[in-house]
Length: 203
Length: 214
Image 1 (cartoon, rainbow over the protein chains, first blue to last red):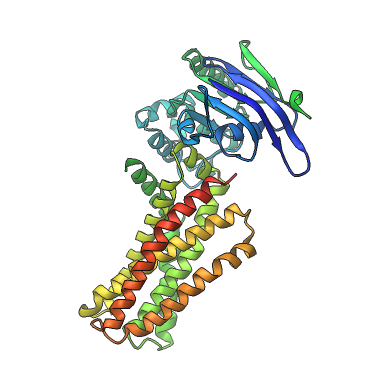
Image 2: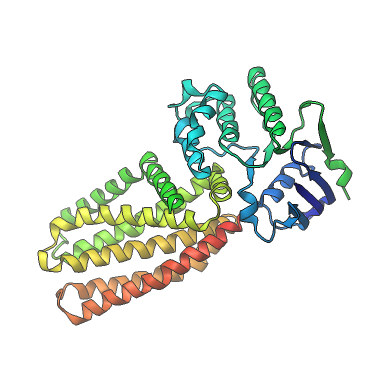
């Protein structure tokens, strides 16, 4: 279980959010909502360890992540707002590298299949449209056996079919006991979700 | 060990795919051609000077470029998160750049070197490449950490490069004397000692700096 306790983020001119508290339970979806600039992306980056200049505590199964951020990161799959793909590698090469890092090379075919990436598997990323690139990025979810998913605007550039695939994946994986934290400002994902409104933590 | 292998394979593929090898060989060919047509090559040390110059130029240009490439397409942060730490990323990057530069340098060097001195020259090329790679990685990561404030980084890093260049130049001047000369051997030992100190400390400091990147 992930617990954020009194997280405060300040930049030189203002407080982005103040004493933010929330918990993400296994098997649940937590949606972070708020207007542009309210700190949604920063909050995810704080949780995953990409921003360290904050105050407060993040607990993973009751252990502070500051004690061992690398152990925590092994339990997390983070999909950022911008894709993390090497433009000069093909779709398959990008996913193969990620699968190797995660030790799940056997899942590569499933990952290519889920978002129907087989037909573009040998194409380089920089030759693909934004929607296809996003699908490649999201395919990393299949390759990860992390127990917590942190997704920043995962639905960017996706068409209707891919959105349905994503929703299906989220629902299936939460049934398996994964915790999911999503930043999204566009739409609803299912009914059994909890919401974190960033405006509640403005100073 | 397996993770290091994966990272090195990826680094090597990246080097091939982004045209690094081609540019490195082109740089060698251009410089060798210029020197040869200028009739200034009289001895093995002259050749060695060219090789070291190319190594210096290539590594100091391409390592920051490679790191910047990965930083901007977010794969650096992702690999650090998914790859369980930054130490191995730095190690893999350093080993691959060192290996590629040494190999290419030696390919160009060997036809020009007489048999008795070949060990000495190989030693210099390999040690130099390792040293520049370590320093260049350190400077690259420093640049990223300081939000790409290049003038400030240059101010901090220049002494490292200048000291190395001065030492390297004097050592190569001595190299012409002979492989058996005691002075030359002791210079080589000093160069290796530099490597043994700078390389591990660079790996650890780079890893720390990289982990601080926001």
